[in-house]
Image (cartoon, rainbow, N blue to C red):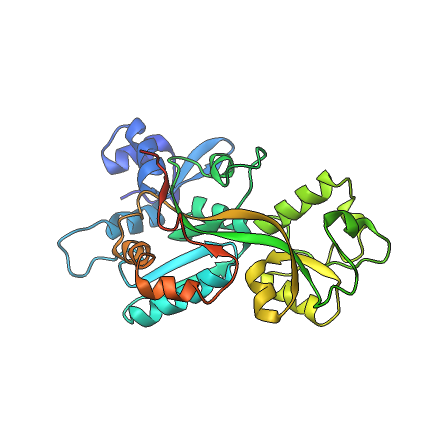
Length: 304
């Protein structure tokens, strides 16, 4: 038994009885716990032992992955339909629990890279303004990239008070004196899109009154507009319909679910992905405006 808390790659290879190349493979493909310190991989023995116990088969007392114990952890971008879908899933499968952490799209990718969740939700628009998420995955995820499964397409835009009293017709009007906005935090796909549109219109975002007032959800932005605390803010169309607000569309975007390869065939993950094809989910989606399910459930990566 190795007594040190952290060991080198060579020591880990000896501990596992494999060569050093296989250690790197286990890190990238099987989630072997590891951290880089001054450019070198170090391995926490306690977590490695737990990792090994999680993979014991044919033993009734072995520790299982969270999803095998009934929990599925989602982390990433806030979405009203996804939130309602998790509730419906939990009601349908009472022995399971799907939970969500709202940390924005980039936060979801970071959590996925750290092994803190089973599924990350993301809608990060790439510089080509065509694709979503792939470039950000390659920049954030070490090792093998996750599977990318579409959840929906949804419409992004600007929320306005009913009747549009500020007379805002588009992004360009946000540069007018006296316009007050609310915003989403950096690292969210909505903030990325908003900043991109402001830049294209030649508007200095930080110069807009309220630009630095950041809220964690689309619904929070909608409430600020509804109560007159802001003239507008970026959010999805479904919020406009729920709060009876006006809406200026900007673009339809792709909202994806990212699943590590070593989690993809977990029973809970497969139950959820299968649930996306069931009539009860499709009926739920029809209750909300601004969604398109034509790609829902389709595996976008790896490609055939």
